[in-house]
Length: 125
Length: 125
Picture 1 (cartoon, rainbow over the protein chains, first blue to last red):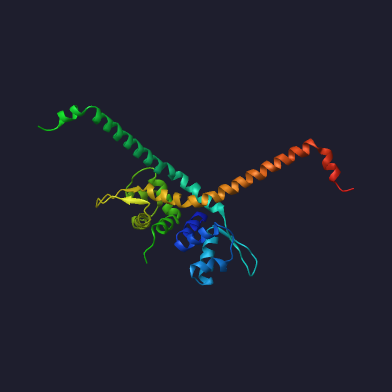
Picture 2: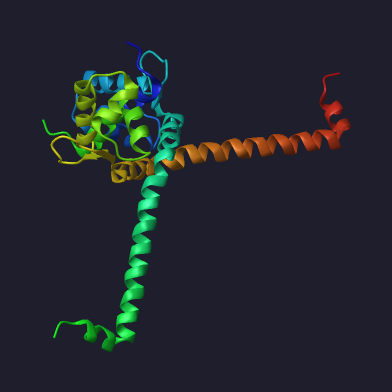
């Protein structure tokens, strides 16, 4: 089954080690050997992760036989960001509602401070 | 093995049907039955997808036995957006470089238009 691009990208991101590899690559191009060092992983294990990241379009690898430098591919991140755009209004709307609620609370608070007697009148007995 | 939250979120997003379900839920709360209708899928298949989305924190389901309405959970999208923030500068830097390059090209073009003779001088013979 052919996986669509965006699914392959999300699948590549669904692993903490792969995200740590991306964080390292965001600092600059490195070889697989250099990448493996801080992770205490075999070169083979790192290579497996790199293949998944490559399929997800998140990295590009040089074709030099011995030293295959990996570099990050910003376009894939941009694609995820574009996809998120449709949902951005959802959390922004939520933040707006929260701001409105807090403003309302503040206004009520001011009213209470200004008219303490009107509040006392409402109290039972 | 316990999966970290962000990995569970990305894993849930790594499927076109699940992303289509989210697009539907972005319009408003619906029941599983209503969700299943346009997808030509069994309720069981939809329920499986919903479980993955729920694990990823992307949806929340009501606890009513018969009608368990699903609603989207904007917080998980915000988490993905926050994670993306560290990489945003990468593609923004690339766009800046592209803009600089195009500006440079434009400036060169203006120079060529203004000084056609200086260019002719550089030509061989």
